[in-house]
Image (tube, rainbow, N blue to C red):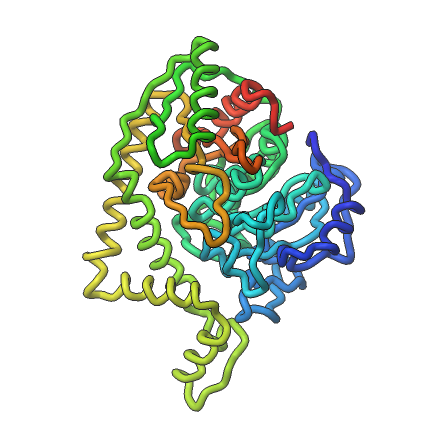
Length: 441
């Protein structure tokens, strides 16, 4: 790894955190003396299980929950010599995209606290300094790639199933992925070579995309697809994006303008909401104070359930679970849930057709840099376009493209390939990073 981090400095920074971002700092740190990630310092989002460590997913309903098993991701990282230094807060159970829905306080952008850091992997992003080698988050609907854009680092979501989710608390089972922040593409690739291990014993969606690190080389794409930018993007993003397109053209790369089907792109957020809320209402149904959760006693089991969930779950989670249950009501399933699943196939086919015609698809990660608190903000579908990769399962990476002139806040470019073409994405990402001037080194 180019950036291994610094354990002592990381602990010092994490102990000094005043941004509600740190859930737990490991006091007994033992690391293997060998392995390809030897001495690499990392944090992990507080929705991954670890042996005998409180793992609340930033929810009051689990504030005394200590798992008795270790997530596959943690096991692989520790076996490779990496050092887990801390657990980071998130939007409760991952059901949020702003960093404002943790039960333990709002998490702000570390570059400027007047701005959102984004979520739900907000704590991981807010504590990701040079003293941390990489940060493990989860990405159900852009929850790593969007905050990565808001702080100007590499954020990566692999193909669905590439990394075992055993030990990751389920939010939306068909969308959840292990994802991470790194300082550069090379570190992202090396980390992926460790985590891409099939785990059918624990995760039946797990597939074998394992690879040898030596097989990944920088590759210049021949055909790059791009979405033409529109009025919803800021002038800074448009300028940086067009500069990149000009660089690609000067490299004799064939640029293919992709026709934007606005009806499809505008549907992404609605389809995501219906599917994710529905799956969440099922996955979190066991938080009743009987199976899991801090119980609030009532006069009967029904009142106990209500009191437990009303007092233990935040209003945002409650609202999403209520909506999810509504979508799954027998009389509503065809009207909402089944239609959303059909539209998901349309979205998937749309992007599959795009990827069949190009080596690499690029587009801005958002319409602007991170939004300000209490500031009206409307970037149209550009502000949830990253979620499409969760619906399709495709690998998706964002890396720093530029920054706003007024406040120097960063924003990222998105790189995507077709499902299971993660190795190709890595190779092209090395090339694009170099073309951008190695700004993520």
